Length: 59
Image (cartoon, rainbow, N blue to C red; front, top):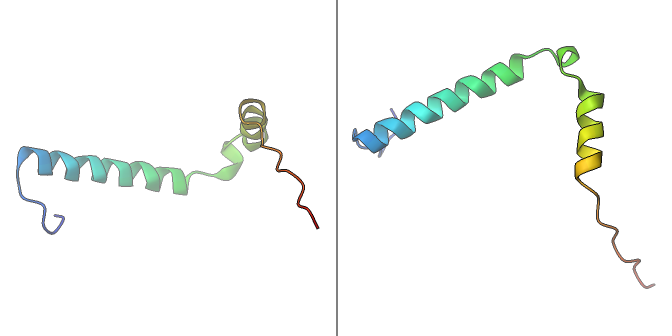
């Protein structure tokens, strides 16, 4: 139970959602990295997110 969180329906739903998120986070952390196709994910990110070119700094 989270301190300061009353046992209302809203409070209980928040606690439940946080617990579910923690379970998901634990599952992600415990996943084997070789099972994740990191190069493919990186390629997808490169194609969707273009880095901004910063203006050159005057000396």
